[in-house]
Length: 507
Image (cartoon, rainbow, N blue to C red; front, side, top):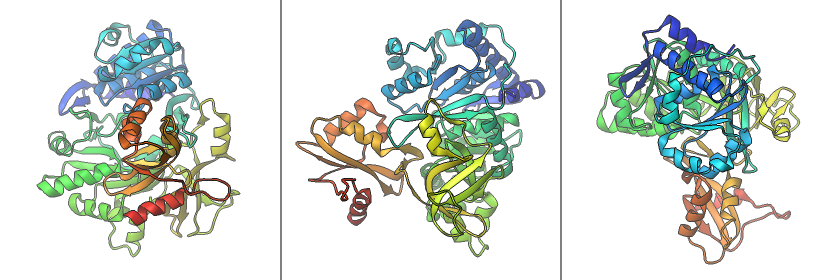
């Protein structure tokens, strides 16, 4: 079954329901959305000649056209490649080349560098700029029938940086995303027809993946007029649209709660706020619950098992009378219904309750593997289990508490930043001899990037300029520490624990 069947059904059964909203204004009903998607899919198949299974990339900021492009690709039997709109054009070029993307949808503000780089993208047959030219003309194409897909066919190719610094394509199948959707209904929240999901976080990531349960219920999809996260705008939408649901990184939740607490704005228009993608401090979630009430749900997942490893339900969060409520708040909840979760030692043997080891998960939500990367796939998928690289411990009731990340990933504002990638860019500067990048705890962002640099005649401005030539702005270090030598062990390995300790002492 093709995920796009949910849109086809909604277009037939709930034709008049509002589907897409820009702010509080309806842009399309479900019948109109299904018709536009079927026509755009016709252009992809017959206008561009794309065959089922080919990849279509989406390098788009949050806009209503995002869902049109996404579902047109699925409807046509193609796989989507969502790309973070914050990425540097060089990073986008790598993903397009690695995925062998046959077409690219791009927002107008992001288009120029990719159009200029067209000769370096031989596989891309066309670049469709939303709201312009060929994109608009495509809706005059005759609609096509949904192309049937098998459960294990690729649906979503999500690129996440690896510890080597090179992005890896996570292969998510039709089955994976259907299981993820079922987990949302079972473990996170039910969806009513008059509920509204608002895309305040990037649609290329978890926020966009949560379109599926809302589509399955023919509920409303709201793109803020700003295209992003603005607390005052979200409060206004919660009142004008109502029953607002969203996925947000902890830093976004904190900003929204602080706005409501400071202004006395109403919060009764928010139905469900799902948070994840980074650590939420216990005092922050307590303040959120006290300010906005029991509208929060926590999830823990990875691109390799999207949004679907554990969940901490609104009832668990709100159960202040429970004797272990404080410990539960510090956890990431219990295994979601359609997966198994264990904590294991280096050989894969399950550890006793309370002992720390690597978190592993298996189930229909777990990826098929990494695109064109058999070695990485073999390392992550062993005997049916996904090895997450995260360290944690399970208690007697099945609550998982994360302890650390074995891969040194920095999570800043809900986005993963990999030190090796930043280090390799900084080493491009001729004055840098050695560098080590670590994360520093930050009250607003969860973590920020800090670089320890060994070299001559360096300053932060020059290093920032180097970063901005090669990687996205949000990945560059917020601080630089210029030192004479990096701490190393007897084997020459840099001791990042010692660098983190220096930062802690500095705090």
